[in-house]
Amino acid sequence: MTNDQKPLERRAAVIFDRDGVLNIDHGYVGDVSRLTWMPGARRAVRRLNRAGVLAIVATNQSGVARGYFDEAAVHRLHDAMQVDLRQHGGRIDAFYVCPFLPDAPVAAYSHPDHPDRKPNPGMILRAIADWSIDPARCVMIGDKSSDLAAAQRAGIKGALFAGGDLDVFIRTLMGAAGKKENP
Image 1 (tube, one colour):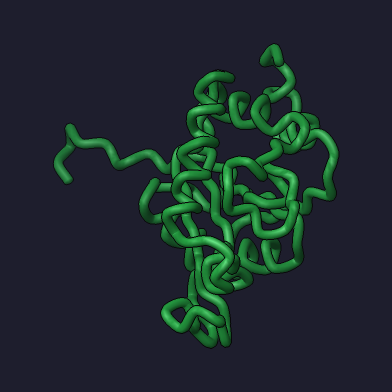
Image 2 (cartoon, rainbow, N blue to C red):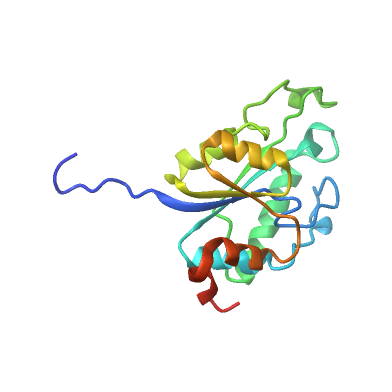
């Protein structure tokens, strides 16, 4: 590195589990018609975007491995989420999806211990590398112990979301700086 080059700044990020955090978990949500946003989710994502914090999703999607829907359905759902978020002034910066499951009925998605399937940290570690995330300025928000275990294994903080208004939860996590944005 020459004297006039600056090192790449590491970024802050919130990594969300999807079902049960950003949207209501109706059980294997693989179709847009089954998408119901968690209260405050769109405001929370917008708040992060405006604060310069990356909003990333890392989601196990065993419905693919079980044959309930295919990967294309997952992408259509994520595309619809992005369209809706844009209408509310927000965006997800990246989606990381693990469709693998031990002993899956769909053989192509059967893996005894896939490195991306939470509680393994693969999706989080890829996000950190892909987006130059500072692990000290990153938190995983999940609704299950496997989300928190993945965060711990990736060397980042984990926060358990037990339901309710996600924007209130994010404001609490962000502290006073997060409270300055109008909803």
